[in-house]
View 1 (cartoon, one colour):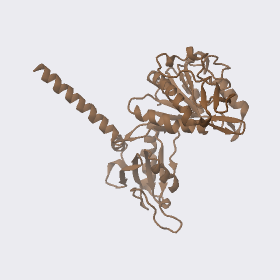
View 2: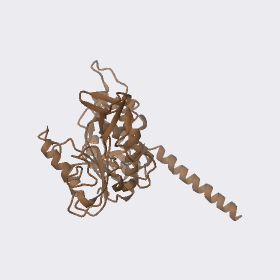
View 3: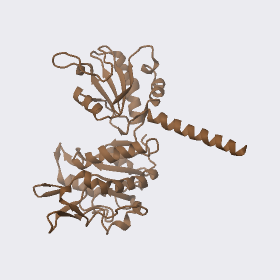
View 4: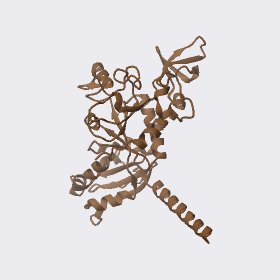
Length: 369
């Protein structure tokens, strides 16, 4: 009887766990968030592209009038909810669903009404919730009802864009955190669209926050919207991306994308507060005597740095990229620049970056308020 009881208990637990997983799998995974308290308006082409790319996202079709049902809901319920949960929320204006000849375009199932809003939630590019405004439904005038309603439909983001001010504030508090520096170039885009997206999906509901800083903004790479090399280098030195104030873990003059795990001391932004670091797809490639072979002459993952990358202590795979030979068909030559094709380099870099995340994120305790 005890054996049977244990068996029934185990089966019940398994069923519960599977049910929980199935419940999550039915929800939209809003993997990437932001602290910017704005709604993002899409054109019809941008809306279609998100669907074709099989994205998960929240969108509101907005009315073709100054409608208090929309503006009141937006300002008193939606925007506070967005800010509390760091959500990236999109809107598409009513008129975007008509072409230049005033013919209706495909809305992919989303209702669009000239006098009121419609809530749409997409999962894998498929509409899973289409909820036009209805004055009798409490989600449109109750914060609690809207929050409860949304919890059944979405998984909150854990990879969250922050600005320079928020980044600076992270170093003045006592909780550990992980931060990824990126820009809008090919390497960062490839990381975002592939490894980061897949990692977040694989760890949904079980992943501490990763904070991201876009460096291609005023105050970091730019001054008055123009590239400022001196300011950019100062930033990389200040935050330990380069070797200047981070001799062991910094990489030359500093590169993005790079990620760090930080245990702040309330003051410093480099040196001992940086406990782990990784650099993605920033290797230097040179020709060899054999025209069919190129060599990686410089990489963050070098023999000299191996001993300080503690997150690789139990790593099974290629820890050293510097010195590797790669076939000529795996590189692109652009003038004097030799570039390792992203999908080929990722075979080496993705496991290393994932190892960094596996090590750092469970230790990262800071949660945005």
